[in-house]
Image (tube, rainbow, N blue to C red; front, side):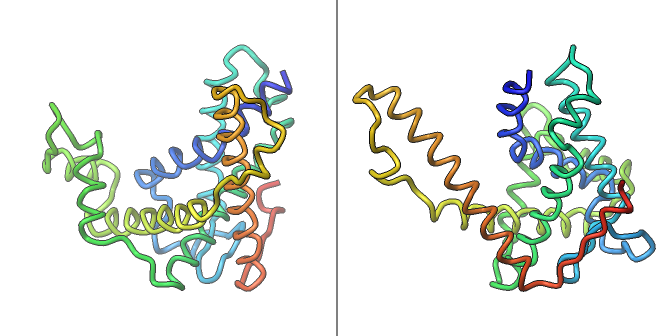
Length: 221
């Protein structure tokens, strides 16, 4: 079971990105967090306790679906799910602050495409503005609030891509692989995945050392 869990844990950041996107409809990322205690601070950005627990519960629900017939508490402990979620949230904030530092932003066109292509706002393959506005109202969001948060998320996405797309596999990475094209392609894909994740982690850890980074795990213990 542990081997299976480790395999699925490799897909955590894909899963976490999907979860992060859904948070926009639950108030995560809103600008006024001053009244909520912070579990971490990255630059001027806060990760509040409320935000952490929402992220944790949604991620936990997703893993519950993956391991349907297995004890969730045991899985949570072996995956160290709290730390995984917190690390994911910190990564998002570090990338957001870094994107702002280098002037990397989402354009109006990027924003428009993200909204009009979102299946939640489409019916029969067509974007429906009334559904878009009604969905925001149901989630107590104004268009300015939602679009501001979405613009930040798109900037984070661009920053992440800028980092990982700078990494590629080399002949050294593939040394010793057999001539089987299918196996070589699989090994190349895995090597690329590992190198890109390592590059992303290295960037985040390096950025944290020069930022005003504080963490208080006691508030979520």
